[in-house]
Image (tube, rainbow, N blue to C red; front, top):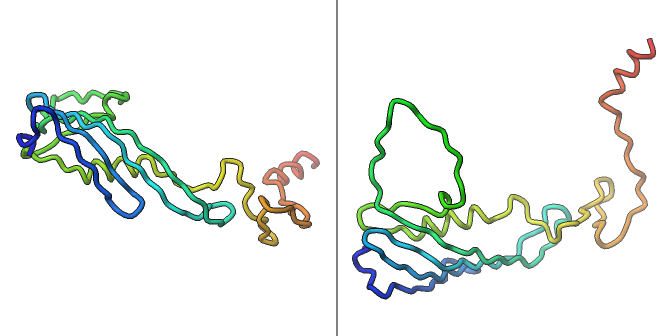
Length: 158
């Protein structure tokens, strides 16, 4: 309950799951709440290019302003607007309760890469022999693919 936040604020730290920890501080100003802190993540994923496991860690800073949710009043004209950084750091709470698990989950999803790479310039595996090209080169000849424009060359020659 937001009414349970003392005047000096509320500090908490929690191990959300193995490898994910969360520390934060909440301050209340009237009905608005400011949440600051960070989420620390450590894991050992497999690189999507070379299929080698590696250690990955990230610290996600938090600075989110929360306000009580109110039903929006829609006008007959819908306005389109572009989000800026302040809009991304703003959220709502309902019924005097703040769901920290959804805030933490959202921030983790936003910061988790689509593909894990052991390093930015990972060379991956040879598509012919499977050799890890970060460790050594292979003796495979580059595969020649037919050009998608080869049909046009035939037309020009005719």
